[in-house]
Length: 433
Image (tube, rainbow, N blue to C red):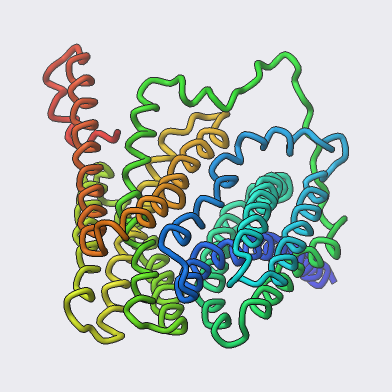
């Protein structure tokens, strides 16, 4: 009888845990499907409709709210905080507003009224970034310590899956069922986590957090005041920029080269994202057994060389799988490279301020890889051509690695000068910056 009771309790616990993972997985998944669609599929689709590279390049700037969302995160924490689990209301409201933005954009004719769609995307970006703030906070409140590890795995997996579907499969749908039908599919997917959230509204008790009025208030600007952080942010702005430029412009290039939306969706949106995911996992294994500084330099230089592979289809008639192989190589190395950057970002986070410190650094990185990269590529490519934009991107990537190498060298030298015993110098060979 006791064994049966324990089995029942264990089954209930397992069911509760599974429901939590399903809930948070659906929330993160639904965020990145529309974002993947508007940042990956839409630029290609607009190019196929004849829009200029300048217009296509402006799309990523609509992700600005994701770059600065830490500025209004305190408001999400505070408004409604007297009610336990108030983040659920934020999630439900923001998700509903995302749904309305999608429905509104579905009725717009892209050929004649693009700016109406851009307004809808900008609003959607703000609402979804705010929903992300609330979802992260709700996860912290709800997931127990023993559940947080797998919960973060669910989050990252859901992000990748959402980007894969929004940036890959939806591009295939665009050519089959058109703009309105594809957007209605996105809107329907966005509603799914709302239903799951409502069903599980009172399933998970949320602990109340007492506020200590004597504790000094933390500012989002504290990170900028710490020594060396401004220089690091400058490096962080450059590190992903070259790769982001080459990757962004390669998608409209494929349209100009005569490839169909289905081909591009498969090559870049599905195979490319799978390669990035595999590279990210591979990068995690590399970090365990290698010095992070030297590893970043090696991967960065290797990544800059793979950008030059994008020049080959300009002068040589490559078949479908040859181009796909180039994408796989580039995206695989990029995945490992970004994993290492995220590890270095975490090293810059202080205890008690990790959330804000992480958000500030990610904001800079997002601004580089989803903001200025598209403007540079969109406005310069018509002037200098595809070949020279890839050369420029590779040059920026190499320059960022050189600057990073010099920075860590000077940092080590400063550490050595301050050592009381010069015999300790050889021990600094594996020093982590």
